[in-house]
Image 1 (cartoon, rainbow over the protein chains, first blue to last red):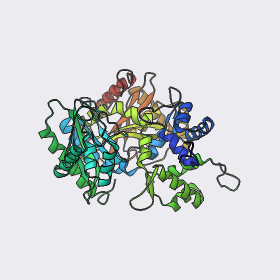
Image 2 (image 1 turned 120 degrees about the vertical axis):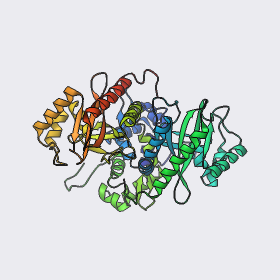
Image 3 (image 1 turned 180 degrees about the horizontal axis):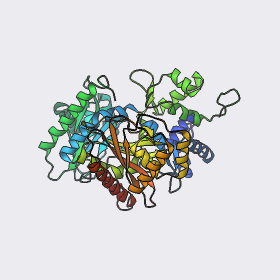
Length: 259
Length: 259
């Protein structure tokens, strides 16, 4: 995609369109035209034309504050992605039960590339503040759901994650490959993963896999609580139960009654 | 967009890309290449090229069953749309309270074109089955959230909806313009809307607006219950309270603490 001078070349219009859309991130949800051009390495005139066409199609919108943001129409189409539609549809009632039993944050994440992508999240007034957001990503090695997804992933992904290096987020993040491999083996053995202040100081995550009929983890469910005084003995069976119930429902779906 | 022979002409590639994406709908979330070409009126070779490029960019994915579906990457980018991100973030805890107090379906919808677009939904095991889904649309005149959104909309939209005709979904759907206008006036007076078996026989919806500081309805929150034995006297204040609380929070957000 890059020529000898480091410039993009021969990119199709479709690829440019995707690059423009991908310039919008949680950290920068509103962009000016200049910012779009700069972030995508496109000439300003090209950026202007593509952005205008995307606004016409509803994929982008003018933001109230000036600049552009992602349009509701894109979210509407994106909502058809199976992992964002069918999976939460099946899992949410069980997440709801777990929330009601604990009043803590309940989350559902899937593997996307080498990160955990949060597809569903239930939070109440009283829950501890967490870094995840629906549609957001967090690292695999430092989160409860991430450890579950990594533990059940092909060895190749584990190798890639280790090769990329384990970034430290708090003093408690596991950054030694050997320790992470031990932790993953323990997850496979027990069906439960913990992240103890490894992503955020002060929070504890307890996670369990949603398994398909082949034993693959299609998603991970977790509960995130304040680490001070957290009753792990009580939380682990609750998360495990909700994840097992959702797994069972997932395996019988959509054959029994559909959405 | 259509020439004298009824063929599309001069469509930009961006517009073709949006047309390909828009071919995927809740009713047909998985499409073969032939279906994409047919639905978009594009030559098969063009459809093939665009679909391949969209798969490369993650906007589409190969479906397990063959064919193509919307990719999780598109949902991830779409999740940045303000109405799908900031609004639910503020409203969900109050929806959660409403769910917990009632164990019924709780929904949040915004106006999109001439329809209600459902951006958030909480459902439990015991709730009645409803037609809405997150990312789905339902008509304004036959749903609780729709009547709220229409009641607070500019007169021009009300005129357009009446001009388009009021489709009958059940024997109870309001199809007489005069009756709908009366109902909308009542919604503005009371701050609450009902849909009594107007979309689905057997279900009752009670809805209330989320108002910004200018008194505009930015969204509508509703509860949907079985119409048999529904205690409207009890439900209306609960929905109204949750919507008012969410409105207050919305007006102070994001100035007080951010996401």
